[in-house]
Every structure is written in C-alpha cells, then in structure tokens.
Amino acid sequence: MNIQKSIADVAKEAKKVRWPKADTLIPLITVVLSIATFAALFLTIEDLAVAELLGQLREAFGNLRL
Image (cartoon, rainbow, N blue to C red; front, top):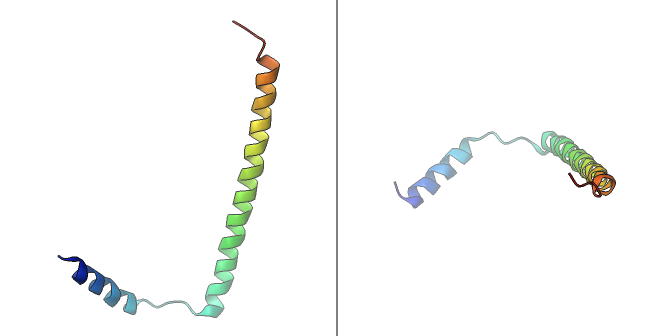
C-alpha cells in the first residue's frame, strides 16, 4: 500500500464523517478550554506549593549529618 492510496482513503473516510455544527461545537470547545485552563492553574499552584515545602524541609534538615 503506497502513501498516495492511504491519503486518498483517509480523505474518502473524512467525507463520511458527520462533523458537528458551529452552534454545538463552540460551547464544547469552551468547556474543554475552561477545564484545561483550570487544570493548568491548579497544577501550577500545587507545583509551587510542593517546591516551597521541599525547600523549607531542605533548609530545616540540611544541617543534619547522619
């Protein structure tokens, strides 16, 4: 199977797909972007908090030698 036939098959199948209308698609995109933004902010804040905690632990226990 060559590349041109594969591309032609993909284009043929893409024409069969029922793509959503804009009035359906835009709210769904908004939901996905909102969730992604919330997750990114949450993970950033969590990462900063853990980094601060580890820094404080390193500072508190850095003088100990076992």
